[in-house]
Length: 372
Length: 98
Image (cartoon, rainbow over all chains, first blue to last red; front, side):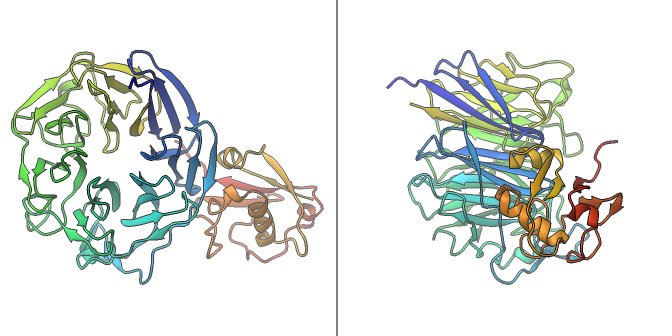
């Protein structure tokens, strides 16, 4: 069946934008800004109903607002914005190691259910896992994660104690993988009733015990739906791979020029082809040597720089953790947004790149919908 | 009618202009005005004050008649000029920039 449209959802520091193209992905129309002036941490469409979109809108002044669209982003309505922790609100660790009570700050990530457009998960700061089954009207915490036996030891990364990654296993609806900065990765196999820390094999020099059960600053995890037991992770430093649902990890940074970074994603047509954007270091949150390069690998270890169409001088942008995505076409389209307000796209598996938006506010998130 | 002036981001959210007019029954207090505002514009729930504790969000201020009422008791009567609709009740975001 011919694909007629690709819709890219871009969240920025000052509003949201929707970029539309046909299946060729050669010319683009930009709509927006939506929610002008507000930070849009994440905006994502339902796999079960592409017209159903959710958006997390937040502001240090005005707090958290949630939006829903039922028509692909033309009309939006506010939905529930009350995220109350369930039960006893214990402490986590603060930056100085002192106990600090959990306090809701914002929704970092929205993950609509694979099957039901009215069901959507939310990852929030301070780290907790919420679920709505009424299209965002109300939210309930699944508290087993925040009450995990390690939770009182979790400490925030520089961006806060945020639950930023939620991955549903398409072959097992009870299995969900999440990641928290800077606690690590966790997996439930029973729909959120219990969680297991899945950090074996991670080594992090910023914690006293480098291979501790928790304390790892996981930046992002990705999974190909056809191969859900294999996970790829961009950690603070190190690119990692697991082939047993996260139970064990091994480093696959290989020949990357730096293995610090935020984004990681997998080609839609090949579960072994993975992409990262290396960032200089945790002190220098911009690309190396003034050159914006995506790196591609077959399974990890051996990485190839992709730079055709990307700026190769005087470029000092960052690419944040939720700001890369892939469409479902063949060849695969890859999209990422930068702190400088550019959105780059490739319609040929990453071989060549084009700026499809150039002067937006700093990009916080990029998602794509492949529409039939 | 009570006149309430909103900061730009809340105007966008509520779909209003800068000033909205509200009918407030009974004693005209900050709580009563904010209750009426949220009832008329539910999109504003949680953006001005905590929905449970009713505590003001820390980076917002409430002014009227050239006075800062932000830390006044929420159930204290508002100035007569506000009650009479001659002066607005102002909701402001703390200044940003540098």
